[in-house]
Amino acid sequence: MAIAETNIASLTGADGQPIALGETRHEYFSDADLAKLADEFETWSASRIIRWAVDTFSPHLAMTASMTDAVLIDLATKVDPAIEVVFIDTGYHFPETLATVEEVRRRYGLNLKMMTVARQNEALWQADPENCCSAVKVGQLDRALAGKDAWMSGLRRSEADTRHSAPIISRDLRGLVKLNPIANWTDAEVSAYIEEHDIVVNPLTLQGYPSIGCMPCTTPVADGEDPRAGRWRGSDKTECGLHLA
Image 1 (cartoon, rainbow, N blue to C red):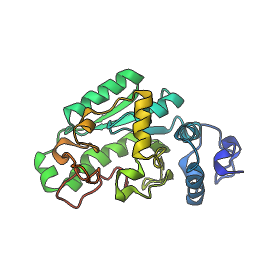
Image 2 (image 1 turned 60 degrees about the horizontal axis):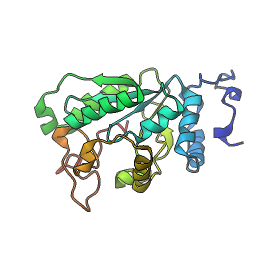
Image 3 (image 1 turned 180 degrees about the vertical axis):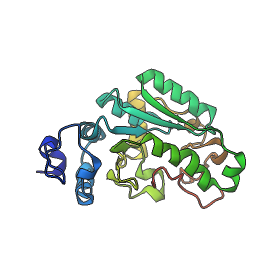
Image 4 (image 1 turned 120 degrees about the vertical axis):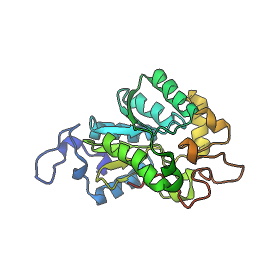
């Protein structure tokens, strides 16, 4: 029987004791287990993957949202309306992004966890964007995921060359299970889902911003450029660190 189809309640942990449904912990899955699951999930729908994650890890499960669009939120709340959604308010977001947060929150009645930080010294993002991201993004995600066993994100392979091999499920550097349920979706599939389900999108995506981060570090992208070319333009930086941790 495939790992993902195994009755979670029948699994046993390292101590030989049964793992009850909804009480599974991330350490019960070996790296080999996660690699097998990653292969299995390539043929699963995003909704089915999310259902598995909710059944396996809830209530110790959260998902992050950048508020570029609400595709993953729409998928996840159809499975579990009460799923915890984490948004990191860095203090540097575009007004359009914050307005999108409120629109999505109202539409779905989100169980929204806003991680808010004090505004950082502006010189930091100019002189040392790596440490700025570590302080206002990665550090806040660490706080948000305290006590969790797994988390989900909307990361997709087609977003950038640096993400082309992103697995649907893996283990992050914290030891938690990380799921990217729409990792194998194409841009066309995302657009079709948005159109079919009237999904909220950040208006900046219609103004030349296919990838939206903090206002000081995000610029519009020209036709033919990599979708993430506007992030930290002019530097070697390609990721804020949320998906590297």
